[in-house]
Amino acid sequence: MKTISGISVFPGVVIGTALLFLEDNPEIPRYSIAEAGVERELARFVEAARDAAGELRRLKESAHGISREQEDIFGAHLLMIEDPDFHYQIKARLESKYENIEWIVREVSRELSQKLVMSPNAYLRERAADVSDVSRRIINRLLGQKEFSLAELSQDVILVAHSLLPSDVLAMDRSRVKALAMDTGSGTSHTAILLRSFGIPAVVGLSNATREISGGGVLVVDSEEGKLIIDPDTETIQNYRDAVERNRKLPGKLRSLKNLPAETPDGRRVVLNANLDMPEEAGGTSFYGAEGIGLFRSEFLFMTPGRSAEENQLQAYGSVLKAMGGKPVTIRTVDIGGDKAVPGFQDRGEANPLLGWRAIRLSLSLPEMFKTQLRAILRSSPEGTVKILFPFISCVEELEDALRLLEEAKTECRKKGQGFSDHIEAGAMIEIPSAVMTADILAEKSDFFSIGTNDLIQYALAVDRGNEKVNYLARPTHPAVLRFLKQSIDAAHNRGIKAAMCGELAGDPSVTPLLLGLGLDEFSMAAASIPSVKHIVRRVRFSDCQALAEEALACTTYRQTDGLLREWAKAHINER
Ligand code: PEP
Ligand code: MG
Image 1 (cartoon, rainbow, N blue to C red):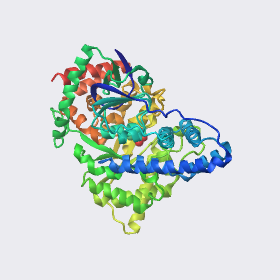
Image 2: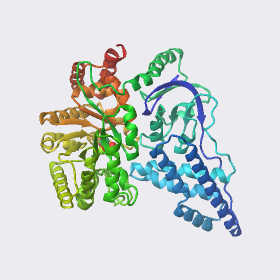
Image 3: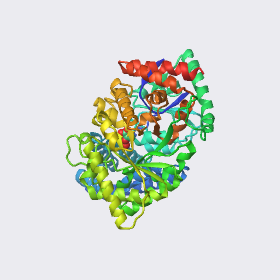
Image 4: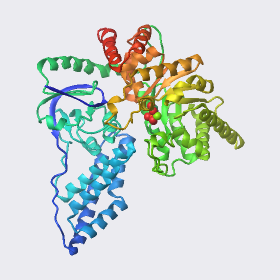
């Protein structure tokens, strides 16, 4: 028996049989060609790229029930296959090297993906997998190899791969793949996004799992703890069987929670909201019992040229407000730069983009763009209940400037006779240590706080959230982080405003009792996580959670706190 630790992408416990999927490119031959052969090789490439694109389109059409985000991944691959610049690079390399086209495609794609891997920008690094996906598809065509497909599996499996590609996830028989273990990957890759949206328990970033495992062996994927257990002994299997049985009963139970309030037995009521990346996803959030949108990341509007025009933004915000039918929608003003690459706003030669021109800093330095967004939000407000959230506030001056521009935007709307709701709340994201330390001052000017733990942990502990080498240090239960959370929540309450959280931590049920105990009022998370968090809220007593928070704050190490949370859960949740 051997246990390997990795990063959990979607929680669950699965015992099953390993299917080893060695998806590397087949051996690619390399040989010289005569000058006269260039045209023929090029024609082979064009045909293979066309076939590969056709295959992707077919896959997209046959993949029923996929979301807009998943469709976009197909779209990105199609764009790449048909990209004139990619075709130009292939042709230029062929005409200078006189080598067979399979090798040329491999070389051009490898260079492209290496450039992306070296990028300081996490988003671009993740796109390297997309380049490999596309080139593998074309090379397989050129070599006459049938694309190995995970679409027809005859039994339930735990899929083990070195680097599963997004199109593999889209194509695979998801009723048969019960869990996934992968050597590479981080929580923000396209592959991880897809696994999470399909609700497949998965652990990624396992380094050498494929070398340790033989196909057909027994595995346990414990993605609640981020662990893969190879050849588990009888006792381990029995322990995990109990967990599987508990989890099996959960989905039905969780669905039955949909219309029940997120309230502890001793009467502490909190609000559970959904995070939203694309307007089209809004309608689906009520299925999970979302009470509103706690974070609408408006960055998507700036990813596609032309989509950020005021009327387009108005339409996008209005559609979300309508879909939510009066439930509150918190629109965060654009948060681009740093690790969020957006065409036209990136690669400006910044040595430290994570400490650079991003989010509110970018908005304040482009006031016309910022006011366009604010006007669009204001104008959308009669469609429902809207709130405005400013990201990456580091000092009170930034909040004051943002509020001043909001007033200017209101005046501009009034002048044009454009109506908007009377009272629109405006809040600050607390995601930089300086904001925590001045939360009492920021609270004077904010209608609410929303704590962004993804960035707060990154900046509090000096750990790049996209860097898997140092990710193990990004501990939400680090005493510094807990003190920051307490200080932010207390500052909000002292001023009589609500404290929300929209970082990933808000959707982690293992810390729900602690967050409740710290006094958090609103939790915003991936919609699919809402039932599990509500399940916990409805089982624990608020007074017990408060005592837990006090104990956690007295812990001196994250290990101690993690142990405390585990023991507490055993005593207060599992055994009841
Ligand atoms: C955060 O930093 O926690 C957050 C919610 O914002 P984002 O992940 O978009 O940076
Ligand atoms: Mg953030």
